[in-house]
Length: 335
Image (cartoon, rainbow, N blue to C red):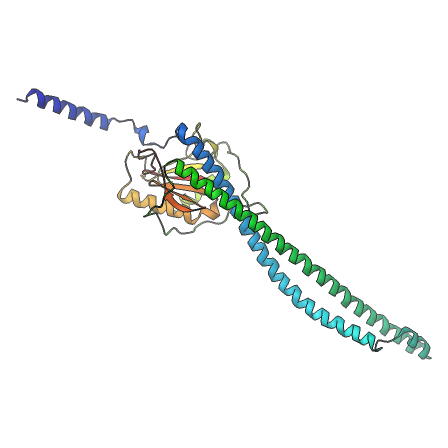
């Protein structure tokens, strides 16, 4: 027969088991940021979005500069040839070797000879004029190409300043949320399986809206780039349970620009991912990073770490729960 204290202990243990067994499954699902972190998340979203656009403009400017410099090299080589040719024309004229129209008219008794000589003069004048015009055009083109390169360099310097400023803003936001420190063991080895999404002419990403009915996980709205990333992830083999659109709160979910990819195949589990689920999450996070530039990724959060294009993997603050610390799902936010 159990004594009173032992009966009490048995009752408490049974009650605890029942509480655990019937705990609200929603506690495992990712939720919205608390009020204290909302401003921080908004600052992070804005900073990384502007960083990505500045980086896109920088990359485009560098590519344009390289192409212009290649053309400038060709222009310079042609200019050297034309200047040599023009020098020969000028020297011939100075020494009187060019046929004079007056000499042709005076010295030609035969009409046929006169016509021939005049045709020769017309050809030589046309040839020399064309050579000199081409020389002038080449010089003008060279100066225009130099101006394009100078503008590209100035643009690159401006974009670098924007990137540095937004990198600092993002790092400050992370620190305010209790993260942003160095971290180890971050996922690596992701494979690029995607093609680049469309960009603006300056290299930045086009703005997007939330398209009604575009979210295959909830039936709500989703942006085109987020839908593309979701589809590409599926094609790459990442088919575990996923939830994207959420109404209310801050962050990218209400904008249709974020998805939560569960480490578990069928649901969000209220515990840290381990074993195969952990391996799945690591591979998915690494894939998101490897394809970030092609897809337009703003940041990735997984296993209490956050990856940003501005500074790579850093520690993440979280809230102490498996969902809040992103131990049970990979969060992907898009530009």
